[in-house]
Length: 242
Image (cartoon, rainbow, N blue to C red; front, side, top):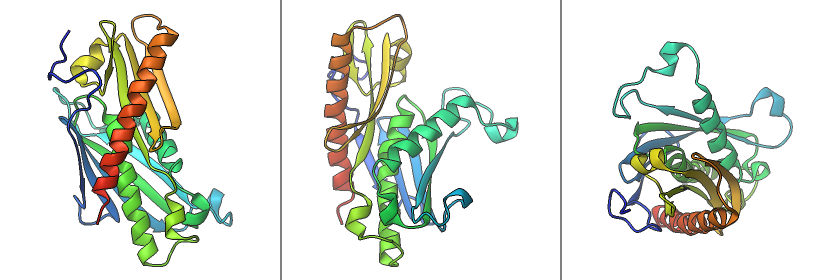
């Protein structure tokens, strides 16, 4: 079966990373995976949470949210509901874990960086786009701290590896890279993979949506994801060029 947008099974959607999209945060990036658009901002504060004071370590965390009309139908704001949903918590924690894998918290010093990832438009892969864009926003926030000589270590030691993420899945028996919404809802196997720029794994989340899947399918999906993350790492590198 042909893909909805005519891509090859191993082809990413068009990826765009626009730095400095918002003027107030220390780092901001609008990341686009096809029609999925996520605004990632990095906010720096001096000091760390109380439980981390005196450790010499910094802290990086994330919050994820989706605008009410990011999807085909309007959803209520979670702030109006009075509680944050389980899916939102799960994605926020995933983004935070992923980005902490890219940074040396000792070299960061006792500074905190909060990454806010707000989905402006959703068409599948919002969490993977958020991780990919948040890395660039985090990099700019660290550069901001370095310019003010506020880091505990050398600037080049703080961001010691890149991190990106991509979705993969099996649709009608075919492994595919970077699923849009139409593919995601039809997937027999659905997986999100977080990788470093050198292809090492940070996190793998995979589910057999319509049953079980074989080891051969898992290997094929991981190969697709690693190749996709390498391409995303190159897009991040180009976006960070002066």
